[in-house]
Length: 277
Image 1: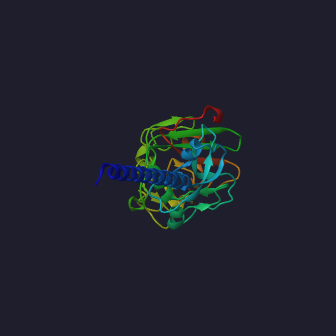
Image 2: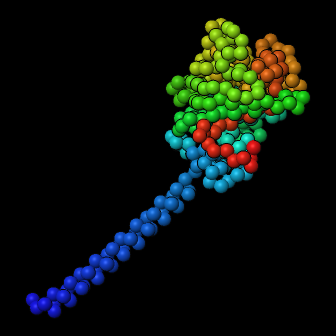
């Protein structure tokens, strides 16, 4: 083969090589765009991610924690620094909280009003990292208080949604640990407690079921020093056979039922937005 023909064939091969490289680059760019689009369509794992993505208005958003079989609608609270996933709210007694194991497992109520998010989704949320819980409390005299715990975690259903939590901070007092008074933690600490409902007894009360006595599902010991899912009493102080109101004992005691409660979760390493505090 003469040199001229070889040179011409080489030029053709080089041109085809450049064309193929161009096609590969185009395909890679298309794949990258498709991956970006898929990521943008995938719901955030929690409300903190919703917040950092630019949505800074409180309201309902779709989230999908890691491990969750499907997206769920969540109420995202963008106050108090932003990025909170609300998991419980009491405001007026419109929702019944004396519910079955299955109802607490799946959640119930109106997420813009009174509701329980669901124990399964609580597990998926807190299993994907280190989370803090903030519990906002209000009484009928207009006072507000709060409690925060780091390392808040709810186990899977196989553990009966075992509760664990870390250090306390706030103004309402450390009712969850029961360490506010000598001897109380033996029967009222919620650390390591399993969830109990009227039809699934996992508490440490030998002679009864705390959820039946105190009219709502919760992480009971024998029975409680904090119970945010009790009966809604419309005026604060109450009398009953058992302390079955909405109780945070270190703030208003066993015989004062609170007007409002909100439980909300956020990753422990979340960077607050000062404009939302």
